Length: 391
Image (tube, rainbow, N blue to C red; front, side):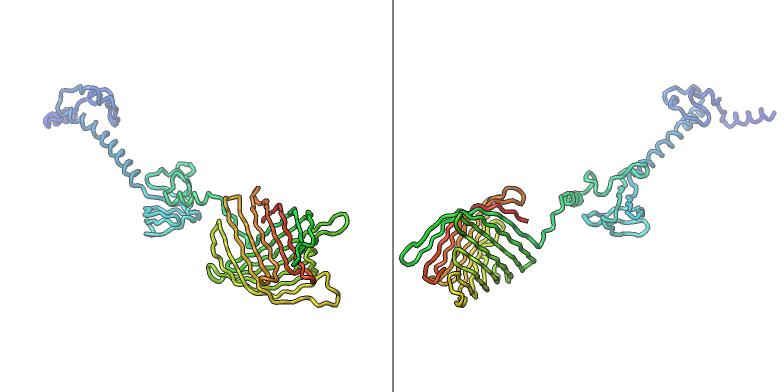
């Protein structure tokens, strides 16, 4: 009777419940199948149709709701920054520069982070590879870097420039073909030709406006009968730059010269100079001043006193790099006045062979008007071929 009463109540209300198993193939209680979308509804009752449509639409609505939420979650995900100390920050990246990342954190607000302290950056639109067990690209990954970062990375990939040392120098060996001539007011009194070997070196120090260098040269030759040449020169140069093109220099020299009959020679000068041209590929400078000059002649008697005098000193030098490996060099020095003087002129080419090795071809003219007490002069012309090592 209870079952009959309940059935009559359902019939009165017009809510006769259809057989769930007979509604449509593939539809069952609590389950949804896509087969229901393609098969016709097997019922003639309008309320049953409403019930069947509702059963189908509820799972579809849940499906699209989940799809929309997952899409929004992926689109508006927070940016994440992992620091080298292990901390993790979430929020929004506001701006990136070569040195800093400006970041708005959920916990701390707007902060500035140094690129050097950052290990990884995950943007909201990028997958979190660390969560997937994959190695995330570093901030220095060229594929993900911004334009300023790429420039900084390209600069960091360049080989480090070698720090320039304050010290430099060179050492060389030269073979000279020489022609020496003695002359006086009546003409040439003697001439000879010989070959000599010349050893020379230089050590320099430079810091900002101050330069200090030491030069030494030694040459020697003899034939089967006697010594032909024996020469030693040691010079110290100090230079101080006052302004861009003006400088002061002081020179101290000791010398022995068998060809000029000089047993001992001392020279101390003080000069002011001008750099007329100072460019990477071309340099031209001159300096002038006075000096104290003292020397002994080898043909003087042992009782004779060394000669001393105050002399005018002039120096001119030029260096022109024609191409990367070829340089034109020229130098002129003059000690004394226009009648009693000693000058040295040289000019030549220097060519780079390999990294620190150079070859130099040079013409040199050395003339002294008073090499002995009989007022005879001396002129030496030489063609030198040198092999230089610079460091």
